[in-house]
Amino acid sequence: MKRPRLFTIVLTVAVAGMGFQASRLLRAEPPTTPRPVDVQRATRQALGTGIDERATPPPPAMASANGVIEPALPEVKIGAAVTGQIARLAVQEGQRVVAGQELVEIDRRVEAAALAAAEADVVAARAEFDRVARGSRGEEIRSSRAETEGARARAALAKGVAERTERAAAVGALTGEELDRVRREDEAAAAALRGAEAREQAVVAGSRREDIQLARARLAGAEARRDQAAAIHARMVLVAPTAGEVLVLPYRIGEYYQPASQGGLSEPLVVLADTTHLRARLDVDERDLGKVVIGMKAIVRASAFVGKNYSGTVVEIGRRMGRKNVRTDDPVERNDTKILEVVISLDGKPPLVIGQRITGYLLGPS
Image (cartoon, rainbow, N blue to C red; front, side, top):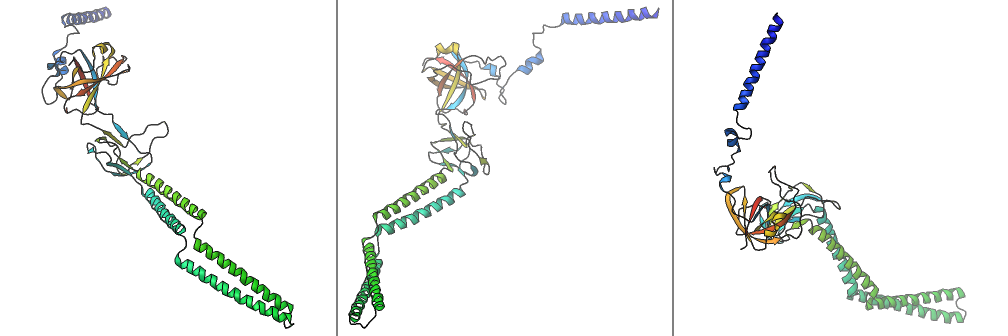
């Protein structure tokens, strides 16, 4: 008797609960209607301004597209061809530089020593060449002539002794051995005279052409090694190839830089760009291509400057379709569409930053 009564109570409670839930669902608002709390959370306002972005609708435009800010001329990514430790940073990010100004110096103490040694070799080779090219000095010529005179006197003395010895040997006063000894001394003195005369002629005539050519070649080789060492020493300092603003300076003093291997990419030491004039590069959808012409007016907007329009003119239209360059945070954005790059030259000096995302509106012909 107790078991059926308990079952009836549980069944009654379950039916009552289901009826209550059904009545709530019937009285509830449609699920697609936003609640007041959801509307408040979805409200987007510019920080610190209280201006609702939706209160400034875009102007009537023939086409619109997302884009990015870039300098008027392409960025210059400067790297080094050598490895080494960063020894000095001559500039800072945001600093404007002129062409030829020093940017970064890599430790070059070893290269400086090699250059000093090469310069010393050039000095020695030039001195040797000058000595050979000028020939003998006056002191050397006078010394050679004095040596020749001495050899001539000794030869005359030996000749006289030989003549007297031969006369004495003819009358039997000397032996044959004594006569042979005197004759050999006479011949030796005559040979010494001939050698001294030849050396005198060489000293007076100066260096040979072959010696001068050899000295000149050695000097040229030393100068070439000096120039090579100077070039290696100079390329350890990076200079600005053109005037512009330093956008990126990723390395710090003491860090080690190594260029990329063949086929690889390395982070540049300095990124330089001319920011005196800015442009906007838009990704125009292929369905809007027929509306774009050179010279048409346009404006760009940036989320950082709510309600601000920056005017410009279309100056370049791409010649090849491609993939999107700029991605937004919109979850419904299509990323598989083809686009054509359109470049807008901005008027004046807007407070925009290189790489900043913007939205461009093409207004029509000028």
